[in-house]
Image 1 (tube, rainbow, N blue to C red):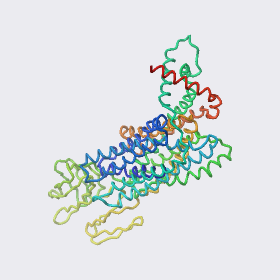
Image 2 (image 1 turned 180 degrees about the vertical axis):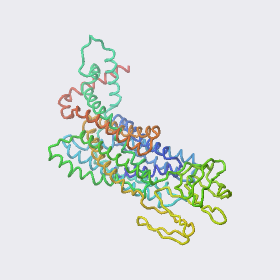
Image 3 (image 1 turned 135 degrees about the horizontal axis):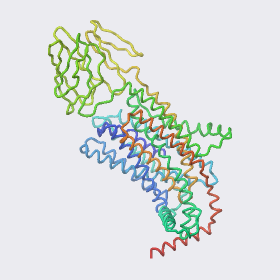
Image 4 (image 1 turned 90 degrees about the vertical axis):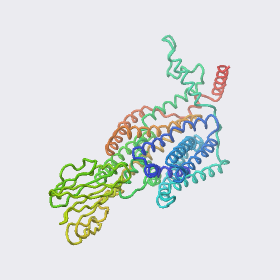
Length: 604
């Protein structure tokens, strides 16, 4: 699990930047494709659960789909080699690789957790709970190392004349091979449950018959306690009871996608927020490794001493509140980041701002543009950056300047997606133009010295040397929003994850009948898929400023948490041991034989 998660998260750590910097997609498209891929990774577990429960069993399903997983990484890595075809080929190979990875990782997801749980007998609930905690720590240990190492491989190692995305995607492929070899090597030690037939098909047929009989029943027919009881004429009572158990859990899952809609933005919106600050890091995995033992050894025992019965569903509700608070903190950070950062212009355009340091007003004229149509006053704070159309990668433009009735021209070359400041000052010979560019990544400062001698300025511990006679200092960062301001939102989100995800996995396994554990794990993973769909809808359709979008998500999760808490209050936990007492093995076998006989008769 450590190696597999290193493989998956290592690839995802650079995926958004790969879309933006290598495939040259914009932020919204990159975010949309990122979450579409994440969503597909959590829709495919249904396929994996179906294969495992009805055909191959969990062990073989994990092995075969891991091979598909490795092929996806290899194709993705080849697509990141610049010499392999043109941009269309790169996009095609990248999408093909991502689809294979989605089927591989998604297919094994419900099987791995359920296969691990199968190694424990029902009476070993505490050991099984510890296993799921260690299992989750392994996930995040792999995630932590991969999110540190993979970006280094991309940025610090140069290949093919640029960032080495091919190596960054190739290393996860090697780790996935290691994961597969290690897993197969332990084959002799595992407890392997054989597949128990096409459970999903039996469930669907039972549901269909119950709905059909309920719809066609008349008022003279005897009443049923539950609508599923209308299938009793053909299906075993135990199967019907098990489906009722699963449906009660699946209904509880309905509000859960909203948590994942917030959680998975750590890899998209929060990453993009970090790139506009003065450094970037991935804190979630590190905090998970700290928080899991802290919660297991300190927090939960202390809550138990207070005689508070903290059930898995209560833990999940508290986790939702922490996630909502995390997005409240992210909103505050985003508001401050936006004050210090200039957003880049789209392709084919640049940004332009004019400083008039001449002794009187000037009027600008730019061929083919009506920008700066009003006179620009002397020594007045400049207007906001204006979008200048270039019509290509770069363009040389002759700027006309009218100053005190005299006309001057400045020829300047502009490059797309850059920001420029045009500084004007007067000399005896006329107007002098200076074009300087701005750094986008974070707040940058520079000084213009109108004096006849050089000046040194220190601001926030940063030294600026400004040459004389309208000299301009280099861009330097000072007073910008530090990446450390993201720590509170990561800490809150990680606390939410520990209280939501680990109890959620344990709850899904413990409340599932033996023959439907992979199926219910797949249902749990589907909530992640729908969470990413929610992000897709909001990111593409809402059109809100980023801070407003963060605030919207926080508010929605609070509302969903209230709904979930009400639903959880009325949920009754199931003891699987009681299920065997209600339906002894003899009755089950007889009912299943009758069911198979009925299905054989139907086909003949």
